Image (cartoon, rainbow, N blue to C red; front, side, top):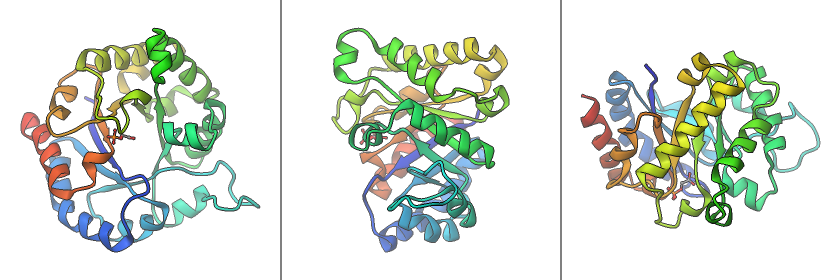
Length: 255
Ligand code: PGA
């Protein structure tokens, strides 16, 4: 049985004190979720990682990005040893905003995915097509290529511990979430691609999230799909009450 994984991606929102208040309010709830097989996490800004990790007992704290080099002259970057020192085990890799605004590619993500796994950390590898690609019916092809390139040289064992977030770019921050049918069918394709790149056992273990305008009203429906094991939530994760209510709809279903 795969765990359910719900992560709030805060992007460039919240100061340390705001972030700390939030975690204090959800950490016990995260324990309740954990008891029901649901991992609840937050990906805050780099600055908030250490302060949040020190107050979170049950909430998974993940980085939003990481550099693939252990140290060096890379102004503005954060390394894996820096994350390790404060106890961070997960990092988003290749979020569409990173691909779009900071020129990240599936090949540069591959370096990060490898570096994370080789140091005992876990990537949450984000894939998804743009609106133009969606309209050209190229979604599957695009995502397959992102997987082919992003997962190059990773072992089956590593990929069984991977989280993949399927986030169609046209649905992120637009309020236009992908229909449950589209999300399930794409997540199914992703699982099949993993089966063909590795084997069925690896495909059965990999956790696949849907992300893109997930909100209170639609979160539960995604989680009821066979191939969707969680959600990556942007905007709807910023208000503690809204986020809790969203997660509660999933928790009720599991109980
Ligand atoms: P959104 O963002 O929920 O605000 O669409 C999702 C994401 O970027 O991960």
